Image (cartoon, rainbow, N blue to C red; front, side, top):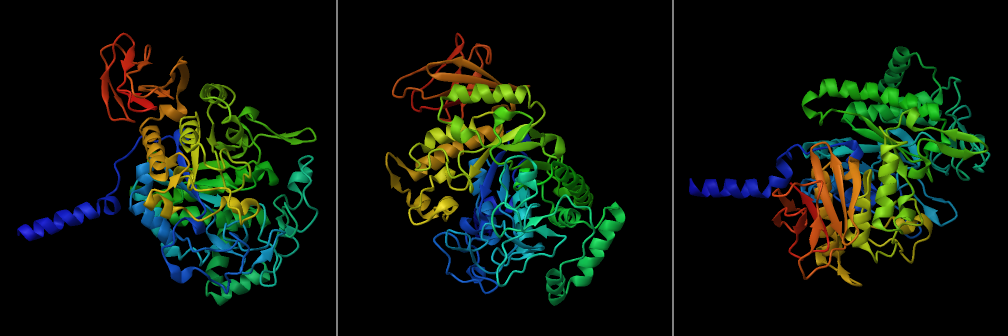
Length: 547
């Protein structure tokens, strides 16, 4: 009996991270901490699927498949890795089946490991796992209160190769290349050479591509897929135009797996109204999933859409200038949020210059909407601190800035973004540096483990307090720099670059009353407010106060 009880307790302890659902956490999309990862580069859970469809390990540096998959990602979820960082949302690169062959895009032979070179929008790419693996990933995330964003591509197919034919006329254009002078030269064109562009503005009916139909027949699912398409077009009344096929195929991932939202890829290269249509179709799919899975719905079950409008800056407000006198409001066309390309530049300034600017925009022109801030990404060749010399400051500027925050995989472990042997955007897409985290590798002036601990403390504080990303901002003091954020009853005071080795008074007047007990989430210490200040223990340069 004693042995059984001991065994049970050990089992429960070992499985605490993986088996038990996390308690509900306060959540607002406007305050979300989104973890973005290139699935192929994050964690390898099944080496048997490392090279599918006859792909070879013959790519240029960091331009081929390297083994990451959904089994590996799911294992990290179950280990509690994302819980420890305070992550609310996981955004993965597209899981759809990619072109099978490699192609030289001018930087050496490349494969579609990144997910943006579609061959079949209805199938999982076998390099990333099976449909069951993907379902297990979504279910594991949901069980811990983590939402899932699916990256969707409405703009283009994958490149044409000897193994991957061009989609038929009526579906795509293959020229001209975009010159980005105005809306037509941004939308009615191909992003780059040999990247066929979907005719998303066409209402002309098209038949299934012969190559896709033959593929489905070979896989034994042609009749089912065609029936679903027939039902979709019959129920919606949409013409059988390219964009509506794409919407149906993307929405199927929502209907089937319970995806919580979309990140729209290359949004400004598609007619704005198309995204509003995609939202309508996706909301219907999400409602269908929620009715079928009421116990799996997280929070208010809101479906969320964020947009990659390349070079959109929070300072632009509601409208993005496409040139030539044409502007687009993507917030009015289906999106709750736009990715803010401005923080990589704004982060060169001081904390208050960032925080006050962002707070003013979100409380003013962008009221009711939000932005997704980042300091590095898979596409931005000018990340803030690409050499990872300021990883602590980077965390503070990203995770404490008003708005939602996007951690790019390895931001929290100082994964290098300046890989010498790679060229172009491949430099940004190295393998997750698990080995450096495990060994607590020493860098110039810091250890990787200490960096992750700092990101984790800020992330968990942010997760516990929606006011951090979605509250009213007010500067309280210059030295040490101190600010408050307030959203309803949720109130926090944060002090940065605090002197250590001595007690320091932190101003909290107007936020916490005299006699109130507050806790510092960074050090774990508790204090009592006296004469409008909190006197710290002087052990840490960051102070995160709440009641």
